[in-house]
Every structure is written in C-alpha cells, then in structure tokens.
Image 1 (cartoon, rainbow, N blue to C red):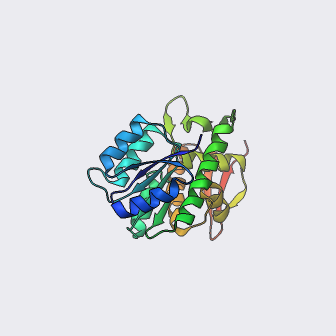
Image 2: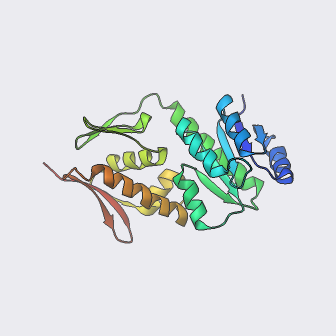
Image 3: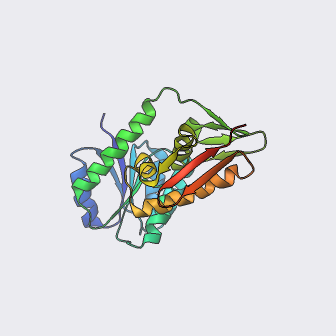
Length: 229
C-alpha cells in the first residue's frame, strides 16, 4: 500500500499542480482550509502532513501544534511564502520537520518527503530501544519521556533524539554540524537556532543535577559532561 499524505493548501492552482504531481507517488488527501485539514487528520491515518501557513479558519501553525498534541512522530513539512526567519523558527519549534519557501520545486518536495518517510519507517521498524539512566532520571526514548520520582517530562521528538545523542556520547565533543545532520539531515542556519532552544530546555531539566551539564564548546559544538563519582 502506498504512503498516505495530508496536504492542506487554500491556493487552488498550486494545490492542483502539487496534488497532481504527488499522486504519481502517493495517496494524497487535499483540504482547502485549516479546520477541515485538522478534522481530516483526526479521522484518517496518514504517513506525512504538508501544511501551508496562511489558511482560512485555522492557520498552519495551529494545525501543527494540535497535531503534535496527538502524534509526536508523524513528519510535518511547511510550505509557505512567509520568508521571515522568525516564521521558520516558529514552525520548527512547533515540531515541524522542515520548511520550504514558495515557490518550491516538486522534485525537492518529493525528495524531502522520501527522506522523512524513510526515517519514520526506520523508527517504526525498531523493535525495542533501550532506556537510559542519568542522574536521578530515567529516559524512555520510545515514549519521549524523562522522569524521576518527582516529575515526568514529555519531550518533543527532536528533543528526545538530541538527548539520546548526548547520552550515547558522554564527555565527548559533538560538533554542531554533526548534531544537526543527525537530527534533521541538514545543517541549515535556522535549524541551528532551533537546536539552541532544545539545548536550553535540556539544561533546565538537568539543572538540579550537579554531576551533569551541557557545556558549550565555542565555535565547535557541545559536550554532555558527566562527572565521575
């Protein structure tokens, strides 16, 4: 069975052209307004979501935020004429996997779709993923959950991937480029800004753990520091 994509776009001409091209490769369900798009997401099963930002009834940011409350794993790609870096950063913070600026090429869109579908499939194919202990915390990568006897924190998918990367490389310097390529498959500047946000959140989680720290290595990257007991 082919992969099923939800595509939410109110520009009729663009929607027709994009849908017509994508349907050569995938099953595509198109919605022309935000409210209908989110309702459709809630009633059908999809493998990937493509969202415009400027939409009637509910904008793409709102849809993405609501989708992430229901599903942390499904890939989300924004397609938008909005070129401000703040908009790109906002989209990525909400849990989007990528952000393409209009006009975009169908070839590039399909390439990105394939990358995220393959990555999603690899995650699904993993039978079991080990849990990690650090400080007083237990980390369950499959559930994006960090917990101890006092608190439970649900991470975003990217935050969970970042934490796992650090835990797999204790006391090792990780270059920013390596982290970005591991998490997103790109070392784009705007993704780098999102990485800084994720680093900040992880630091808040471990701030009461004196033996743990995320150290900045200027102009290089970061190190997950674990002090020997």
